[in-house]
Length: 214
Image 1: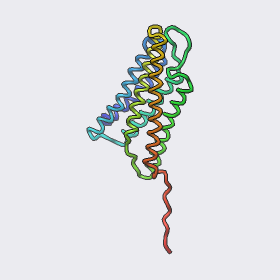
Image 2 (image 1 turned 30 degrees about the vertical axis):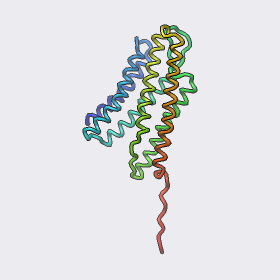
Image 3 (image 1 turned 90 degrees about the horizontal axis):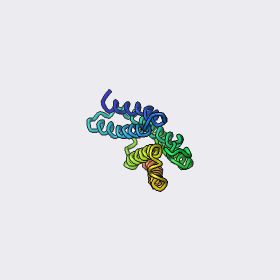
């Protein structure tokens, strides 16, 4: 197994670890550990791809593992941020990091739905021996998704440990920044999938039956 594939496997192994620390409220600064591990996992996504391309180590196994690792990483982060309540250090209402709930749910459904549609499109293309070229909108989307999720992991840590220090006004500003990132990520995610389907619309067309002369 080559180096890029090992790095990808390490990314998969990091997922249950950062999930544990995010949920383990009994561990001091557990949210900070989860943030750092998630950010590290995101970094390995770019690292293994760079090494594979620069050293000509791209393999079928690597493509499979990388795709699976990315989806599990993003979906795990989304589920934690929209479903797990966090407790401000001053007490009070318990709410997930991405709040209100309908906003987080909408964001999560769009992100996950996009990944499922892309997987289906790739399967159809593979069945027709068509290779889907990488698209810049997809790469930018991935970067913005990681930035948004990392921001919200950081926000969860700040609220959990320092809410009494930052006050409601700063918390409102942090919330607005999060909403802007969510909106930008959602719009780009929708644009990305529409762009892929538009560029590869021929993949979805049924092959015409050949006419045979008498």
